Image (cartoon, rainbow over the protein chains, first blue to last red):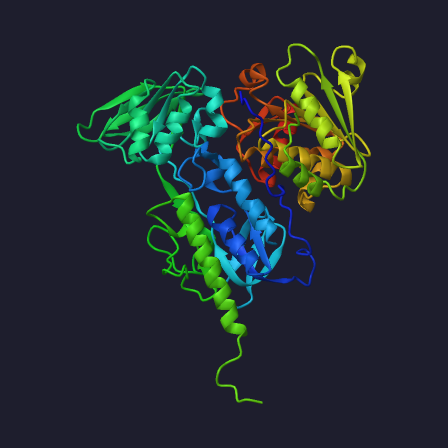
Length: 340
Length: 217
């Protein structure tokens, strides 16, 4: 039970469209930012301050990944840590303060073949002179039998959402990175036992997370193992794991399974519009430019390596500054014009 | 001490600035055996202060039993959000955390008496002639949950046959057990059909039809 109540106001839910968007004469934005996480909202702060007419289409998860993070401890300026929901709400307030418009509409289709660019959502069509893609990444699924079947009935990818339902229960966390360990530690507040199943013999998580995990009496580790199947009847009863070194399989009894096996960039709708790498990430240069002039990308959607809130925010700032420069270059009178 | 800090209060004022019509926040409370009744009551009173169009009405779940029955309120804390008519929009448990967004959205939509549902959905809902009860289980720390709550509430507003509840799972553990809630959001329709996650509008509509079809057999 929360000791202190929080009251979070996220951008309007339910497919609301930006004002005037449904009308036939669509206003052309200077900049449309697709995605409302750390990268998108930071870009919006910079764009707003640059006085660009800016719209953020925040998509289905306002706040992005930090929104379902219990506590963010490595964002500078918050020595005590800050809840993910509060941090993203602050990003949003700051963006709105400088004039950016934030709506929750989710993008379904884009056309970057001609300018102004076209961005379609469920409810409307928007046009923009420049675009920043900041759609982020979504949790990767294990892709094993039982996972889809038991989703919501013991399989989860959101510990802050569902941790409460595992009081005094035994849960398995799959993965060995920062998310797996941080969320596993969060789950020890509820569960009697948290078993981390990891495919390697050591964790990939930050050393501080590791120290805390190894010191926590509720955390246990199953090394060199992959989950092959999620077992259950009405709800989850356990997982079948295979040791990758010995090939032996065994069953771990559990009431719940939390999957944190990395992320996948959300780029399906951009295929053919900007260059993607083999893993589906948007290819950017150090100025956050994509292969299409006027289209920039920032945050986890173009970052397979670091995936940090602060880096997403930083790349969002770069993208906005570059978008502003791109737009300024265009409107600047050319040097070769003869003097009048 | 107020529940809403200064910054949030200002934001709520903006969100509720041009309500299309009057809205009553009818709250049911009780002194004992109710975890967050006091806080829910305080929240309702604080929010009602922030718009001329809003009024708070506080009832006692025990001594105002008739009123509770009239509004179909069967547990507390409860908030019925009522506009020009009672569309069947309910909150059981305190709408804190991400659910605060759902409350503000419900107020705005009930005030307008019209939704943002698609033509397709509205057409299907117009054909519903049997009662539909949607219960959306949530936790306050679930960023996906308001989407499911808002959708259910919109369906309640769009159809006189549909009523929709937000149910805060932590405050009603017996219901969480009864409906096997192990993850949120989880939408239970007419006791028979359930849906995991914040599903898109057409999928929720399909499940609603499934629940109705099941009952006809």
